[in-house]
Length: 126
Image (cartoon, rainbow, N blue to C red; front, side, top):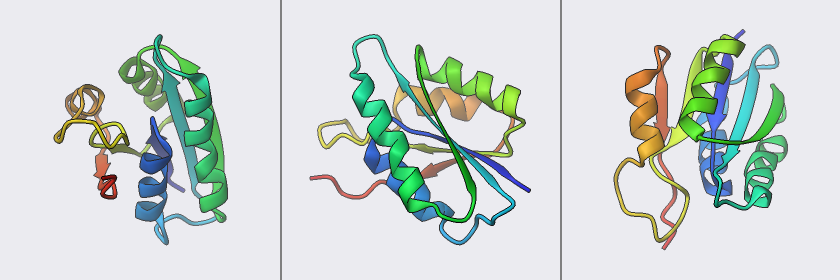
């Protein structure tokens, strides 16, 4: 049994993570999808981002979490609390106006977590 944590800020990131998981997940696995609303963010975006996994992933158990706070801190806490085996993230927000390259949260998680962190490719949003 594997526990995957999908850290997402957009429906695009969640969809890309679900595509990555594809046939990798089994009925014995657990997928925890977390979206953190930053102080200036809209909590509806977090709900939309997490709900995508419920419709895209059928076989594994899917748990969704939406929280307010600093994304990196919330994700690191969940990894420790939930005994997560692998974290899936997007390189940056799933926003067509976002600059290319790694966003701050992705960069922080890559250097701070002691479990594999997979950066899923996002579709071309332009």
